[in-house]
Image (cartoon, rainbow, N blue to C red; front, side, top):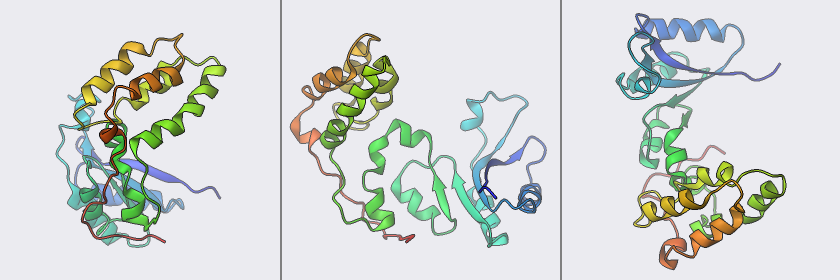
Length: 214
């Protein structure tokens, strides 16, 4: 049998009680699904847009915690509004896993120390310079296949999120990722505009309890 994970909300429109959530999970679990990724907001299909549904309904983390308590044999993962490693650490005390989506895309360097924090990795986390240098041959492969530079570079706009160079980095990439441009060349030019102390800064693991899943 193939492993199946169900990602779902805690409720929908008028089916928004915890009892409705538990009934749904119990029903699906009877079909041999044992992993659930639960976005801790209800979905309001009447009156809210998909964008608004990501922020307007209040987060109800307690419902997900209760779900894990009531279904200890199931793998229950939590999702929704999680943006820091500290929050991840807190949620892992009561759930089996944490899913982050937009925070990982908007600020991918957030995860630089995740392996050390959660999986006891001993290797030093990469600097942003190392990450960018790793990307260069990858970008060349895609260029040789005829892929436009914006298809790869646009996913790197958030690499310097919350740094003093964040706006300049985004502006340069956005202005130069033309379809005909060679992505690796654009990336190298962008790197030359970033101070060495930012490129080579080594991320430190937050002062949080290390959690091992090994």
